[in-house]
Image 1 (cartoon, rainbow, N blue to C red):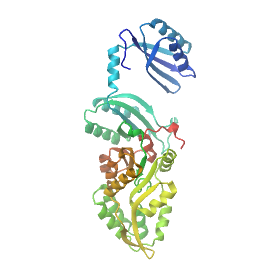
Image 2: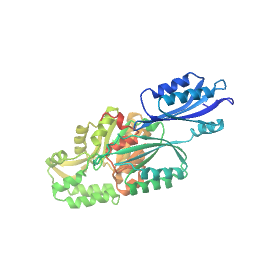
Image 3: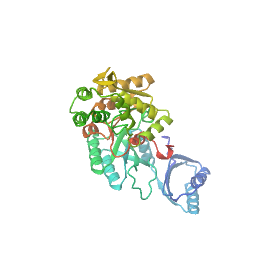
Image 4: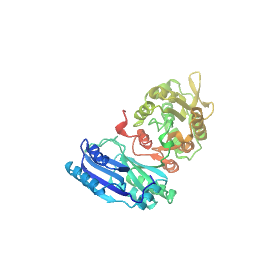
Amino acid sequence: MNDIESDSEIILINISGSDRPGVTAALMGILADYPVRVLDISQAMVHENLALAILIKLSGAADSAAVLKDLLYEAHQLELRVRFQPVPANEYQQWVRGERQSAYVLTLLGRRVTAAQIARIARVTTQHALNIEDIVRLSARSPLHDEREESRACLELSLRGEPSDADAMKAAFLSISREMDIDISFQEDNFYRRNRRLVVFDMDSTLIHEEVIDELAHEAGVGDQVAAVTEAAMRGDIDFRDSLAQRVACLEGLDEAVLARVAERLTLTEGAERLMKTLQTLGYRTAVISGGFDFFGHHLQRRLDLDTVYANRLEIVDGRLTGQVAGPIVDGERKAQLLERLAGEMGIDLAQVIAVGDGANDLPMLRSAGLGIAFHAKPLVQKSARQAISTIGLDGVLYLMGMNDAENPH
C-alpha cells in the first residue's frame, strides 16, 4: 500500500443515495474498465440509504477525466450523488502510517442509545487523543415504539491512537455511565479479543437472581441475620471466608430436603439462557466458579448444560446441615486459581478467558481473565473491574465479544 508512484493520482469517491441491488456492481464495473487500483473501500446502509466511499489510485497512463465522467454518468443513472476529492500522496502515506497505531474498541450498551450519550463519549475520546474510525450497530434494529423492559441497544466504535491518560479516560467514562444510565466498555482490539475460548461465571446474583444462602437462611428462619452478613461481604467489608463461616453456621440443623426445594425456585438472570445457548452453539467452554454451593451449581449445570462447576460443599450428616463447609473453601483467591487451572487444561492463554461476576470475591478472577466483567455489581466492584454491565441482561456479554444480533440464531 505504500508504493504510490509520483505520477499517480489518488482520488476519494463519496457516493450516497437510495440503496438498491446492483449499485456496487455497476460502479465497480465502471472502474474495472480503467487501470485503477482500489486502495480502500467502505460501504454502509442506514434506513435504505447508501453511503459508499472508494479510495482509488489512477496510474499516470489513465485518463482521470474519462474515469470520473463515466462514474458521474452512471451515478446519475442510478439517482445517486457523487463527490470526488483529490488526496495528496503525502497525506495518504501519513494515513497508512496511522494504521500502525494501537487499535481499540469502545462498546456502548444500554436500553436506549441517544445522541447526547454519543456526543459525551466522542468528546472524551477526542480529549484523550483517540480517533473514531468506524461505528457499527451490534444490536438488532429497534421498533419505533419499543418500551419493553428487556430492550437493548449497542454501538461499537473502532478507535485508533494512544490514550493520553488512560486512568482519567476511564474515570470520565465511568462518570458518563452513572449519569446517563449506559455501560461503556473500552478494550484493546487484538488477536485474543476475537479468539476467546472459555467463559467463567459466578453463580449467585450473576447467573441467577438470588443469593442462595439467603434463601436457605429464610427457610431456617434466620434470614435477616444472614442477609446482613451477605450484603457486607458483597461490598467487601468482611473477609469472604469469615462471612461464609458465619452464615453457614446459622444453617446448622436445616433439613437437606430444603436444598432441592430452594433449587427449584431459583430464577435465571435476564439474558442468561440466550447467552449460554449462543456460547455453546459456537463451541465455547462454560464454567461456574462460585463461592456459593455445589448442590445448586450442579442444578444449574443440568439446566444450562454447563461444562464445569466449582463451588463450596455444605456438610451434611444424617440428613441435616452441620453448619460447616466440607473441603477447600472457594474464595476469591481460589476462584482465580481455578480459572487459571481451567485455562491450563484447555491449553489456552488467560487472555482468551472471559470471567463474569458481581461481588468483591470475584475481583481476583476478573483480573486474571483477559476480559473481566462486573455484572450489576456494587460500586466498589464496578470501579475495580476493567469492564462492567449494569444496564442490560447477561447476554450483553456477547456485545463485548463483538457479536452482532443479526448473526445470532438465538
